[in-house]
Image (cartoon, rainbow, N blue to C red; front, top):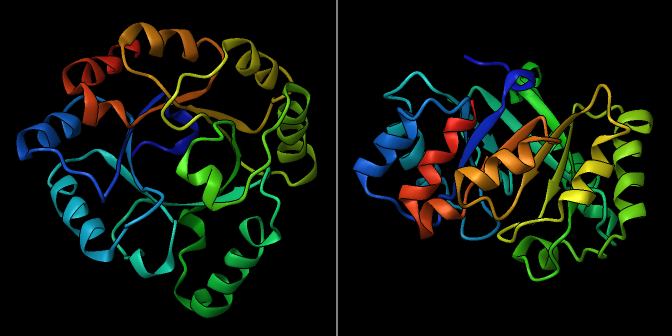
Length: 225
């Protein structure tokens, strides 16, 4: 198992979307550092279990990004808990997490849990709308990154453009103040060239949507390693 702090490249699989068995095999055998299972809507336990059962045939590290407690199941190496820093509603930063811990505390493997300070930068993204986010300026995004590291001491800061390619200058500025908190970037990485560009400043890049739109190009992004 590869620890999160060593991840450079990650594929993200959405339980509400589908790949062929051959494509899933290619993802698992690609050499990526990890696979994250997660999505915004229609994430069901059956969908999560279906992906998990396929991925577990291989040695690749696998994490569940928790979007609802009904789809949580044992068997993952890590459990990633999003905390949406630019949400206008406190529940997406604290209340949902508190309710889950209150209800399932004795069963939670806290050694395998990591909190992610999310900053969602695409107003058209489902996650942005669901969490009632406010669109950050560059200064806002840098401020959220500093909060993640120095105020909340979060292990991960996730700059999320969700389906569109972000501004490389914003990513660069967000990266500058982060020394301990791991910077994960996701959004719009479709080709190896995209991956190399964003990896200049991100500790970890996530490739997700393009697996479902141009699989052959997306699978090549692993070559940044």
